[in-house]
Image (cartoon, rainbow, N blue to C red):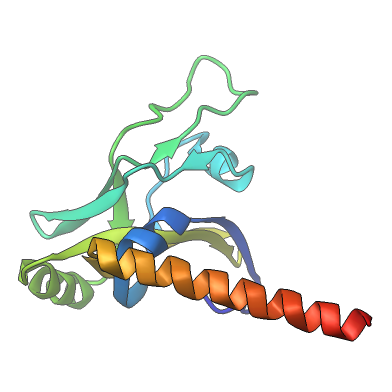
Length: 156
């Protein structure tokens, strides 16, 4: 997600970026009830193995845990309920066509605030094989080693 003015990143799904190769991403709103908004704004969310699915022309987010707000009264929300994602019909049709292809799934990548509204960056992803994950780890380690050597040379 590119840093735009008026946006504040709340959480990133790093596990999804490691386990999936991301082909496209789409910004969508999320329908929250009651104290869920305060919980999200205070960062009390967890992705776990969350994913999105399309049912009856609507996109639903599953396994996305929003903890109960600590200062709420008796009327609190169910932390594990499925959440509806807000998209245009054309976007939903596009997602449906993509997910019908073999191996593609919808995974939430980021949760952020944009002009005071909670948004979800939904990725159209394909699962990585074990050798792809090993290659990513190797590349990350090489970058870290190069940065370390560069810093050591600058220091003297």
